[in-house]
Length: 126
Image 1 (tube, one colour):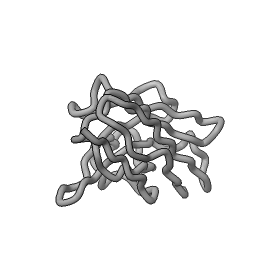
Image 2 (image 1 turned 90 degrees about the vertical axis):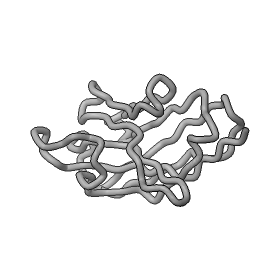
Image 3 (image 1 turned 90 degrees about the horizontal axis):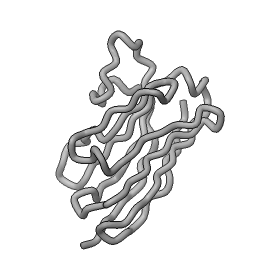
Image 4 (image 1 turned 180 degrees about the horizontal axis):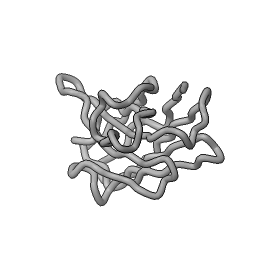
C-alpha cells in the first residue's frame, strides 16, 4: 500500500484543518487505518484509528471530542477532521495502514502498522 498524506498547514488556535490520506496498491477496504503524530524531541504517538468498514473508531484522550477520523473506501481515502486545534497539536501527522488480523490488531500500537505515508506538517499558533 502506498499512502500519501496531505492537508497540513498553519492555523491559529481554535481553528480547523482536514487531513487526507490517499491510498493505492492494495484493496483499500482490507486494511485498518490510523493517524499518528510526532513533534520534535517526542516519540511518535497514536492519534486515531478506524476499522476496515469505517464503523468503529478509536481516539487518544488528547484528541477525543475534537478530532474525527473517517474513511471513504470507494475513494481509497482516509480523513482526519481536526477542530478546536491547540498549539499542543502541532506535529508532523502520519497516516498508516495495517494488515494485521482483527484478533491481534489493537489500533494504538505503531508496530502493527505495515505501511506509512510521508507525513504532513500541522502548526497551530497561539
